[in-house]
Image 1 (cartoon, rainbow, N blue to C red):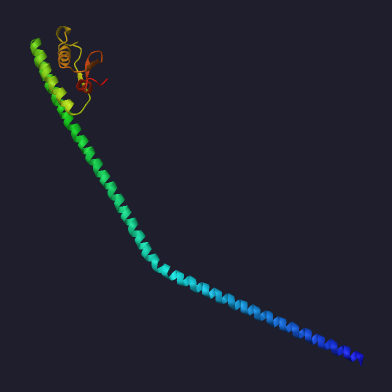
Image 2 (spheres, rainbow, N blue to C red):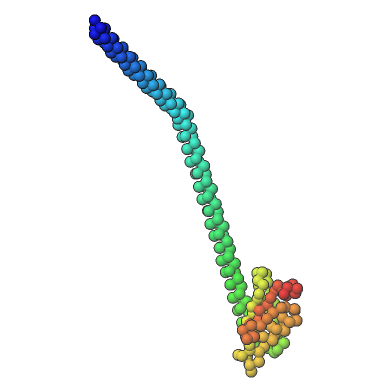
Length: 207
């Protein structure tokens, strides 16, 4: 009789343990299922939020892109326009420089021809006529070059080595004119060229 009770208790205990185990398993599975459903729900909400955030961004992006393209196009246009204006200005300045250089060259050639003609005539004149002829030519040269805003004026007179009896006429006449009219000058090239400093002539205080 006692053995039967022990067996019955063991059976009941086993059944109880089995029921408890099944309940634990069911509870765990239910908890996992709820957790999975919760994760799926949260994931769905997150995707919905991202979609809602992306939708206005997708609407804004084309407009923003168009604005950027327009700004970049305007910048390129302004830059090209600036470069074109700079090139045109450089071309104008270069053309002005060439025109001025051409005019100065023509004027210098004209002065040289006049000077050569005057010197040729002076060979047949007396000393007084020589001085007057050279002074007139020198006045024209100094006046023209001073108008070009040049500080230094270089005049080649020679040393008279090819003059009659090796007596210089041009150099003394030039020096006499410069000295009497208060020009600041300096002889160079062994006395064959004189350099006039217009700044020191007009403003003697300049050293």
